[in-house]
Length: 192
Length: 192
DNA sequence: TAAATTCCTCAACATATGTAAAGAAAAATG
DNA sequence: CATTTTTCTTTACATATGTTGAGGAATTTA
Image (cartoon, rainbow over all chains, first blue to last red; front, side, top):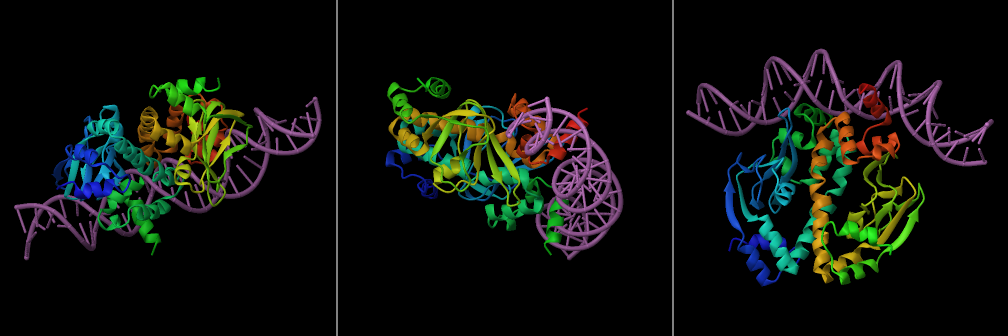
């Protein structure tokens, strides 16, 4: 059954009833994205989110000058999506692209939200998930990005995404930190 | 009844049943804070959140060098709290301080969360509130703080907090933007 | 209202980061 | 395996922002 790894992760938050799991599993569709392929494109109104089974996505913003800024990475076990655009049914300001060949379980986000109305345990999961990933985990970074220098930010990246430094290109790290590859090289230089 | 303005705001998100409102209203306590007084202190494990009826709070981080960085402002109609610390029952990394004499309606956050288990309409409110304030509204700033220069950030501050520029000191704006008052002055200079 | 305090601006200099371009190293491609 | 492309580092210079300190303006306090 494709959803086993999925529900293992989900039930780290809240234990679900069998009927809730059955309803949710009926929404899941296995898909794969080759490196470089996009799961969400800028300007598209996204419907689905994607649980990353294997691989890596990044969520990118492209400035008016054509520079790419990476907002998040989504490695294994994370649910990737352009959630604000999905919730508001508006065009996504961000793209989500595979940095490695990536296999996912996709589902329709509004169909999921309907399940949260039908099943109190899914509502409880959704609340716990938002509290964890949108409130608690983000708190430290809201300050650091506006206050810390690039070297400090780099060290915080290493802590936030353990192991990812071996998997992504330097210019992706720079794009995540909001600095140039030149500046990132200077950080490595000063660390020697 | 003290909760009238409160429930007017709340029901912009989800209409509540009378019993849900009665249970919630029983948690509310009216309080006032003089300018300079703190609602939450660093190191304290916070229990309450505060709906701002009149006045203004700021949520501050104090760096190891003693500099203050302002994470948010909470003007009228916003619910102020150090939510991650409240949720995790850990010491708050932030203080919340009145920038003006401020009157609030406080309530225990976990008691509120219990109401979300008891009343599906309160769960629906909580979901809608988190989606709006923790997901949708924050999205643009997650990029801008790591990419934009100080002048752009200042213009985004003006848009995000209309009218606040007349109510707060320049050094508070600088602390919000993550720059020095000197740099903020340069922005005003270049705008002339 | 006078005194004290805080706020704001500005100047001079220091540091952090961006830009552009070049070349070397590494990876992808045929 | 040779070629092409991409990635990474480095240099030189430009710009943005921080630091310190001074002085005047505005606000608060007595």
